[in-house]
Length: 456
Image (cartoon, rainbow, N blue to C red; front, side, top):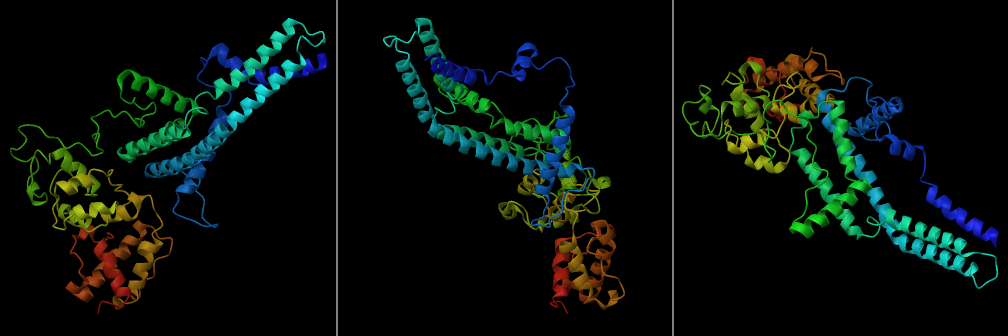
């Protein structure tokens, strides 16, 4: 009989003490600690680098078994937002697996508690004082307390997430994830331009699916509803990616601020601005807003804040570019002027990466310079068109790995050749000499028509 008791108590004690480890002891004694450095930082750094490398591979526009990996080089600023998007998808996958596990555990919960109760009844029967076994009242109390604590411990650890309706848990997590992504899409993604900010954004998103966050979110919502009758504020709001030193370039609707103040409808800040703005109003198009739009359009920095020689051409290139989402295309009029609808569309974009792309069509096709493989988009169409342009017969074909910068001389030559041979039939815009080497939608169409023999 003593052997039975020893085994029973030992099993329960082991289950209770299993969670006691040095981590518990350290946190109990010193909390987070007072030292900035900690022994695990080298390993944590390596694991973080490995994880980000895998996210980079997921972010690349390649599929298949032979898809290349990420080069071991400096990640440029415009690539970090794409890596963050891949990280959000990865976290969603792990979060969904946790929710599925939680649902399964909820189904098993009742059976486990019933088993603990059955074991307790069995031990109580074995140790009944009416049976002459030498078991005293103190032993009985110890066993009862031990099994009572085991049951209570299990119930407390799973009290909310396993007992609350699972659809409530899912609703909390899904809504917070959707809110986070929506808030992130309204931020200028160019702000996530380095590794620490990318890691901070991913950690903030990961926090949404932590058990402690879900439980606290449900508890706080219930408390606020009981007291005020309205839902509470999310415990994990969209992170502030950076604290700008100047007023934010975007408002809460996700658009850059369009300043509206009294007394702004006098003389415009920019001479001749009405020639590129439809229905110009200084209140709706202050100089700061015009400058932001010009930077989005890839207008050369020397012309920003003025109506320069290329401003109208950059607007025309924007208006013929297919936008995402497609619904924005219905708001664009190909009239060579920016109206309020087009202003609001432009203000959703970050500034042009003008060291990599030179107009809105290039930035749209190449993800603002993040895509460097132009073989299918530019190189092959140029080579195919050149075969039907006799004056370029002696010009070598571009190599498949040619960069956009390397292709610009060929772009300029093909544009000139098509204009000379086909004239107005090519429907090519007469760009200034400074823009002749740029890849545009009308040139893309003309090159394909020449290659297919549709222009004669």
